[in-house]
View (cartoon, rainbow, N blue to C red):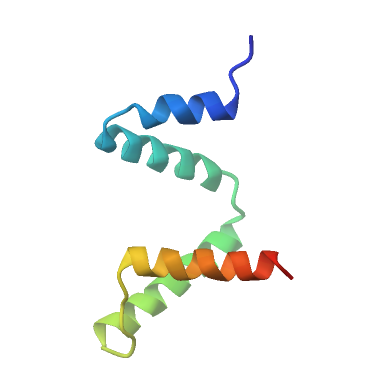
Length: 81
């Protein structure tokens, strides 16, 4: 019997939070494999640009939960269109 993604998800929720975080990191890393070098280079340049802006005080960071809530609300709004 094949394991469904829902079953894997439910099994993962039973793990301690540190193990879930490690699993999430590994899954995200696996998605990054095969990214063309030019895209990876552009992404790293953008990360460096943003880090410089933060260090210079040009932009203000917001808490992760707040950012995720805002992103989720925007996605819901777009889905209703």
